[in-house]
Amino acid sequence: MAKIQRALLSVSDKTGLVPLAQALIHAGVDLISTGGTAKALREAGLKVTDLSAYTGFPEMMDGRVKTLHPKIHGGLLYIRGNEKHEAAAKSHQIEPIDLVVVNLYPFEETVARPGVTLPEAIENIDIGGPSMLRSAAKNHESVTVVVDPEDYADVAGQISETGGTTPALRRKLAAKVFARTATYDAAIASHLARAFEPTASTSLPSALSLHAPRAQALRYGENPHQAAALYGRFHEYFQQLHGKELSYNNILDLTAAASLMTEFAQDVPTLAILKHTNPCGVGQGTDLRAAWDRAFATDKQAPFGGIIAVNRPLDAACAEAIAEIFSEVIIAPDFHADTLALLQKKKNLRLLKVLKNPLDAGTWDVRSAGADSFLLQERDLRKTGADNLKIVTRRQPTAEELEAMLFGWRIVKHVKSNAIVYVGAGRTLGIGAGQMSRVDASRIAVWKAGEAGLPLKGSVVCSDAFFPFPDGLIAAAEAGATAAVQPGGSVRDAGVIAAADERNLAMAFTGVRHFRH
Image (cartoon, rainbow, N blue to C red):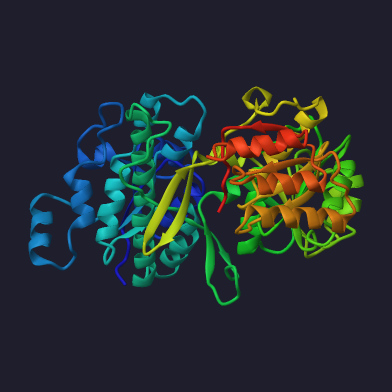
C-alpha cells in the first residue's frame, strides 16, 4: 500500500474538514488548498500550502482559473510506475498528488431558491472541482478521491492506521465521484434547458438524465421478493419523527397523501385517509377531530393499515380518535407535544412531518415504461375554482352544491381512474376507484356509501373524466345525487345534459380531465 504524502483539499461544504485535515497532518501528509478552504484550515491552526504557491500561478478571474494547471492534473493523472509518465512528471517538475478532497459549488441548492437569476446559477457552475474529481477518479489505482463528507472517517481511519488506503476503498470512492459529477451535470443541463428555451415552463427536454443518490435502503419493494431502495431528496421534504423504517408502499402512499393535502389550505381543518394511494375518506370540520369523524365515516374498513394526512398541526383530540385503529403512517405539518407523546406509544406507527411542500420539488413526473424507457409529463397541478365551472344544465347549482362540487373535484383528481366520488358538504360519502367501467366505479361508490350508512340524497357526484353515455349520470341520479361535476367533452354531451335536465340535476363542466393511472 503506497503511502499518501500529498493531499489537495478544496471544498464548498466545510463539514468535517478540520478533523480530516488534522488526521492527515498527524499522518505526515502535506496539505495543498485553495481560497476559503485554506483560510478555514489556517484559522484552525493547521499548516497548509496555498495552491497558487504550489503551482507558481496566481488564482485569477474571480477564482474561475485556479486548479486548471498541469502541476495539478499531471500530479493526479500520471500512472505511477509507468516509465514514460514518470519521466514526463520529472521533466516538468510535477509532484504526485495522492489524495483529493473536493465537493462542488452548490448549484442544485442555488437554483432551488425562489427568484434565482441566470447569472447566479451560472456562477455556481463548478469547473475546476469536477475536473479534479474526474482526473483523480480515473487514476484511482494510485489516487484516493473523496467527494462526500460522509466518507471522511473511513479515509482518515485507513490513513491513520496504514498511511494509505485500500484498493477496495479507492474503487468505491471513484465510482461515487462519477455518480456525483453525472448528477451535477444533469442538474445543470436541466436548469439551463429550461432557462434558455422560449417555452421553458412547458417544453420537454431533448434528453432525459436521471441521477439521484441512494437515500435509503428498503427492506423490499411492493412485495417481499422484490429488492428496492429510495433515491433522491425525499428527506428534504419529509422528516420521520417516530416508528419503523418506511417501506416501499409506505412511501408511495404517503407521497400520494401529501399531494392530496396540497389541495386544501390550512384555514379549513381537513383530514384524508388513503389506502394503496387512493383516498378512502376525506373530511372537513371545525377542527381536525370533526374532520376525522367525517373522513372515517366514509369507510370504516379500508382505513385499517392506512395512511392519514392532515393539513394543520395534529392535536391530541384528533390523535386520540386516530389511535383507536391501526394506521401505518400519519403525515402532518407538525405535531403538538402531547400528540407526539400519545402516538409514540405505538411502536409500529410512523409519524412524518412535512418539511416542505412536495410540489416544490419540480413540475415533472417521471415513470418507468419498461425496456429501459421512461415517460415524462408535467404534473397535474391544475386548480379549478368557481370561475372555471361552466353550468350546462337548466338548473343552476345551489350555493351548497357549488361548494360540494369544488370540494369533490379536488378529491376525485387524486383517485385512480376510472374514478367516481360522491360528496356532501365538506365530506366524502362514497368513493369508487380504479374500475374499468365508469358505471362500475359509480356502483362501487354507491355500495360503499350504503355500507357506511351514508344517504346519497342531495349529494354531488364527481367524475374524473366525462360520462361517455347518459347511463352513468342516470345511475347517480337514481342513487340520490342532485348535482354533478365532470370535465365534459364527450360526443354525447348533449344526451348527458338532457338526462340531467330531465331529472332536475345541476351539472357543471370543468373542461379539465384528471385521469390517474
